[in-house]
Image (cartoon, rainbow, N blue to C red):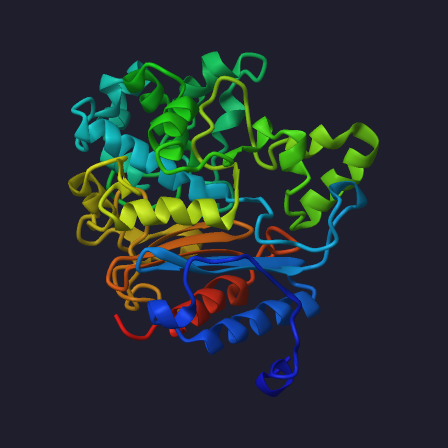
Length: 408
C-alpha cells in the first residue's frame, strides 16, 4: 500500500481518557492520525492483527489508543481496547536491570563484581572473569539467544536435567561453554538474564520476581502487571491475541479452560528465575515505569531508586571496538546497564532523539524513554507470525511517534 492509498484509510480507534491533550504537551496531533493509519495499513496487509500505543510527555499521558478487532467470544469484547494486556516479552529485562541497579545503590552488589562471588559454578576458566556488568550488557560470552548467532549455535538447556531444572540449570549454562571471552563481542544472551535473576535471588534473600514486584512494580503503581503464568481469569479476558501462537492457545482454551491462556509463550522451567521477560502489562502501566525513570527515580512522590543509579541506563558501558555480532551483523553498538542507547550512527533505520534508551520485545513490544524531550512511549504491533520480523511495525512506528514532537 502506497502513501496515497494510506490517506484513504479510516481506522476505528479506541481511545482512553488522558491527562492532557497534544497541544498542552507540545505534540502534533495530526501525527497520531498518521500513526493510526500506519497501524491500520499493517492490519489490512495481514502483517499484524492489532496495535496499541501509550505516550507520555511533561508529566502527563496524552495518547492511549488501540486498533484492531480480533477477539474470542469468551473474552467478552469485540475490539482491542487501551486496557488490553499484552506480553512485553524481553522488555522485562529492563526491570531486571533496574533491580540490579537498586541492589548496587544499596551496597549489596557492584557493577564490576565477579559473578563467581555469588555463583560458585562460575569459578572456572573464563567464566571466572564474567562480571555483573558483562551480564547486563550482553558481553559475557554466554550462550546467545537461539538463532542469534547461527555460526556457533549453543542450546544450554540441552545440558540440563529437565526433571530437576532448578538444581541443574546453572551447571548446564556453564557446560554449554562460551562463544568468546568476556567483553570481546556483543551477543544477546537470555541465559545471562536468568543468571542475573539468580544473583538477585541470592543478594535480595527472596525470589527475583518477588523482589522486582516489591521494589519496582508496587512503588510505581503497577498493580496489574504480572508474569503470564500468574494470570487470573479476569486478566486473561483482557489478553491480546496477537499472533498465531496466541490464537492457537485461545482456540485450545475453548476446550481446556480459560487458564490455559496463562501458559508462558516462551521457555519456562520451575526453579529458574523468570527474569528475561514474560510479563503481561498495559501500555498505561509501562508508562508509569517510564515516568519514574524520567523523574530521577521517583513516581508521584515515592522514591524507587536514585538518579545516579538510573544514570547507568544512559551510560555506554561497552569498551571501544565491541560490536553487535548477532546474525553476522558486526556493527557498532552502544549499550547501557540493560538497554540499548540509540544513535543514528549505529541504528539508521529509525529516527529518534540521540541517546534515547529503548528495549524491544520480540514479536513485538517496544519501550522507549527520551530524556532530552521528557518523553516516554510504549507500543505493541505484534506480528501475526512471531518470527517473521516486520521492520515497519518496529522502526516505522517509532519514527512516526517521534515525528510528532515539537517544542521542548
